[in-house]
Length: 274
Image: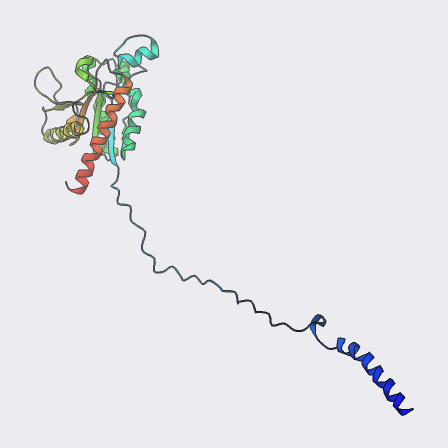
């Protein structure tokens, strides 16, 4: 009888054992597994930017300040007038050298040159005053003086159109044509040497860029000519003849581009002490 009781107790224990094991504290009733721990997150620390090199200084020279003057403001080019009006004329109140100022300024700006136009339609003022053509330099003179008193300039250029024909004023090359340029320097005033020296330098610089583009420096003095051209007002003032009556606007502006480049080259040489 006792043997039977012991046997029943053993069976009961064996029956309860799996149930008791399932109640033990294993997560999710599974064996613990040694999983690798994730690496700690690395934090990026930025050092204070106190040891940076200084920014490079802009060493580009200050743009050259150039005053544009158009004493004979209604001087015109026949091809341009004809394309606009159908008429052939060498003077026009609308289509003239004065009306080309913005295109000319753009070419100078491309070469780091700052142009400012003396905003006076001189020949219109002459018409209102009843002045004769030969009085143009006298009429424009007070306007130039006032501008030079008010603002600082490095160079003054009085732009003109020459009266001679195409054969004299045109440089033809296989690639393109240019209007020839001429520099006029008045000798009938003290201190003309500065103007003459700069005109000769500019002639040489333009010839180095496009050989044959310049007709040279024309010295004017004595009876029958102005001989001053208001160049006594400034130590570096030029009268520039841009082509002649038969040149096209495209030819004129090509030459203006070369003129601007030559001025920029001279200025760069002066800045560097060459």
